[in-house]
Image (tube, rainbow, N blue to C red; front, side, top):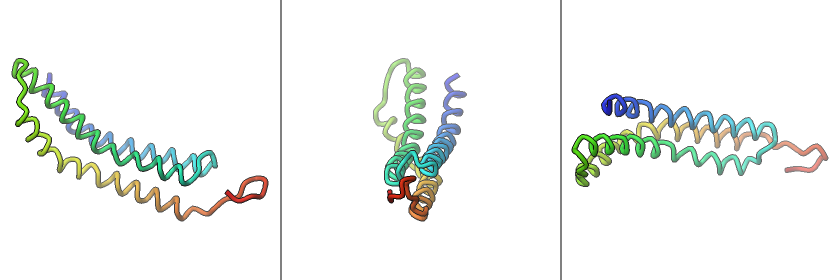
Length: 124
């Protein structure tokens, strides 16, 4: 059972991180376009999407640690846990690349977006 969970988390967590980042940035973009969120606030909130690849690696690492802990009968090996975490760092880079590109595209679109005036004629 743990093997199936580990495989599902290993393949699903990075994909989920990229999809969640894309959805979150799309929602922020729509809120800016509607005028319910300022561009600066959207840019700051969009930066939180950069944490998602690290959360994906943390989920994979935690799942692997739980599986090894239960397989070893309650014994925990700190050196093996650290080695596993170091081994997962390239995966964080692979998951982070599309998220960083999405965030950069989002910030570029915000910067190039024309300024809109308010309904009363004043600038934002």
